[in-house]
Amino acid sequence: MPVPAYPIAKDAHLALSQLRDGEGARAGRQGEAEKLIQGRVAFVTQTLGPVYERREDALDAYAGLIEDDRKGHVFAPLPEDRVCRLLSRIPEDIRAQKAPLTPSFSDGRRWPEPVRAAKAAWQLSIGYWKILDSDAARPARGAAKGQARHLRRKPEAKDLTPEELLALSQNPLTAARPQKALDFGLFDFIPPDQPGIVIADE
Image 1 (tube, rainbow, N blue to C red):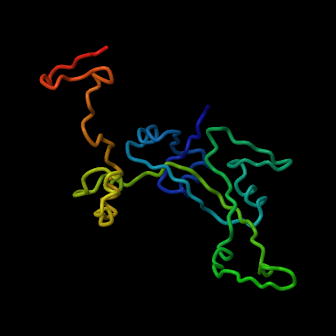
Image 2: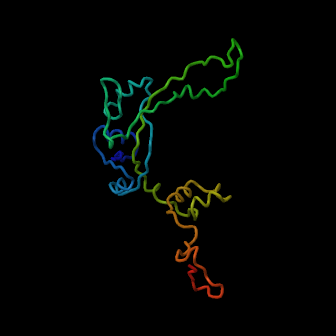
Image 3: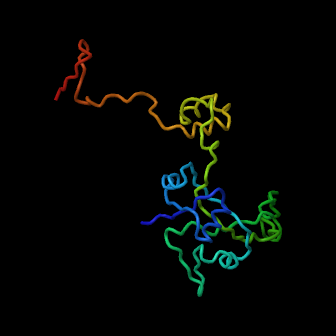
């Protein structure tokens, strides 16, 4: 099954511009993207552009980039071009109303009428390979030693700096201790007087 070929860009606006112009490098896998640009990338999903009150207006603005199921406007992008989609969002002014409602217990109702019904707003979301700066891609000097999965259980984890956390995320996973030999198992035993010998008892 084909995978989406995400654009490779410094930011979401440049990625959208490349999609619209049919230019720029694209890749489905991180290894492919890094090979194309000879650098480090990270997958990012980001919203951008204006917020539309009507879904129809957003579909018209991004025609040819996102799936459209309206009658007379039906459009389905190819699997490798499915890198954009519309997100239904709650407008900022409604989300800012953080004051909790208090029960009114009047007119047979427990809660008062809402001041305004929350109307959905629509905004474009795009996935792309973000090109990392060389400083961000390179582990910081003097970073904490070890692996994040071990350090997070220790009290000193709260003292790690952002640079040290970034360096830890770049460290390859290694075994916490040397792997035991698998030459003997449940049906083998080592004589107590001859520790260098493994005897099969079956």
